[in-house]
Structures are given as structure tokens and as C-alpha cells.
Length: 135
Image 1 (spheres, rainbow, N blue to C red):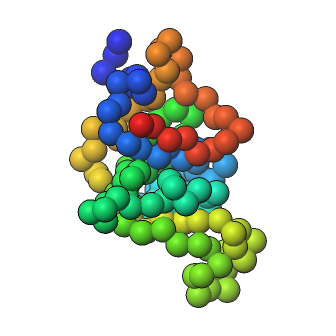
Image 2: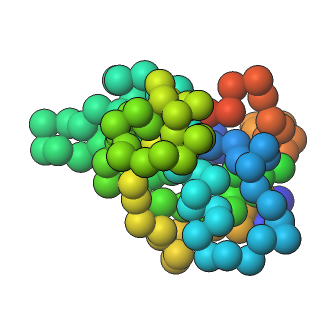
């Protein structure tokens, strides 16, 4: 298989995959665009946002996925409920019960630019649930 493809069953570290199909604009060249699309607003259960006894997140890495391609990779540093953010931005009010993360880009990630495929070499498609957990 071509090196640009990555079989998700071969990934051994825990990752959160966020489908950014609804918010990502391929014409937007702003460096923060992929980050903003990836980090908010998600329904994430507490056990997926928790840390281990060393203070590390159980799922420490977030991938922004657009049509199967990894557009951004971020190290999650914290999670916050949207309603707790002090802002008048209407999106934060609309999605008050959803979560967002703060994080840092991992620009040298092995996942960046890869196209994720399943064990049958089929590109991951957007599902009804835009959040997927690996490992």
C-alpha cells in the first residue's frame, strides 16, 4: 500500500479522531483554522477526557480528519466545557453543553497528511458520530 495511507488497525497509541467535514474550509489558509475546527465543540464522555494517575490524558492526541485525510494533529493539554468560557461568541452559547480542548500542534507527527483506511483499505468515511476513539 502507498505510504500516504495508514491502516487504523496498525495504530498502537490512543487517539481521538474528529471529523471536521462540517467546519473545515480547504480554501482557508489561516494557520489556526484546522486547530479551531478540530478543538471544538464535541460531546465527549468524562472517561474519554480523564487523566491517568500521572496526570496524562487517556487520549492525549487529537486528529482533525477531513475526508479521511489527517489535516491536523494536536497534543491535548486541557478540556473545558463551552459554557465555562468567558465570551459572548454565539457558538459558545449555542454549544454550551459541549466540550473543547486546548492543545498544541504536533507539526512533525507521523499522522499528518496521511489518509486513514480500515483493514479493507477503504478510506474512513464520515459517520453519524463525528468523534472516533482508537485504542
